[in-house]
Amino acid sequence: MVGSQQGEHHTAWDAHRAEGQGTATQSHGFRWAGDLLESVCSSARQASTVQTGEPFPVGNLGNDVLLDCEFDPSPANGKKAADASVTWTKDGLPGVVYLYENRAPQLQDQNPLFKDMAQVFPDAVANGNASLLLRSVITEDAGTYRCSVVAPSSQGTVTVNLRVAAFSAPSFSETNGTLTAVAQKWFPEPNVTWSNRNGSTLNATTSLSNNSMGIFRVVTTLSDPLQLDSIYICTIQNSLVRSVTQATVEGKQAGVRPRQMSPLPWQQR
Image 1: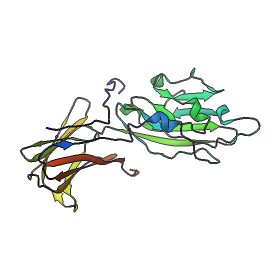
Image 2: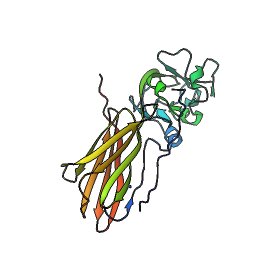
Image 3: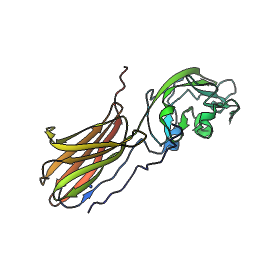
């Protein structure tokens, strides 16, 4: 019997827009699917120019992604940060992705691809945070975005290069002392490795199947029977994202938990 507590919600995206012997338990906590609104409304770092803390974010297909843009919210000349003008554009597309000006969205010239799909938060702007929320990202959303801010104490433009992938931590099952991990969505095509607590590579059988959209489903099974009081580490990664999940077998129970889900360091190609 395998119990699970899912922390990531898989959302269908619009194709046109572009389970150790014993019981295994798991719990998922992704920063990717975290509380984006709370992140947006946090206080911005003090700076004299416009900046981003994440120039190469990775969006998860079908989920929301936050493009970070921050500026100095200090008042000047009787004006406050809430009076800032924020313009988001995307290279290669006409119009704006989002324009916030005069304390309100100005969307007359918004590119139709981003209608109801993009948002800047007024409460966040008042704290020096001009970040852009993109909803239900698709592959076509990848590209270079520019955040331009004119504020009382700062002005400038910062570039954010959005990359789009599909990724999910695996769920685990145990059958006759054999451990299997299944991850429902990965793109680009991932590699899978198993190792023990010493870092030694373990033998496993892995199969990948992809759907009509090219999204891969991963099924990977350890070839050797589980040993008690042992740790097994399953790593799934592609060129953009790495998932590291640890299974700990103690006595007659196996506890399974993800240790890390993170973007890989950006390398220019």
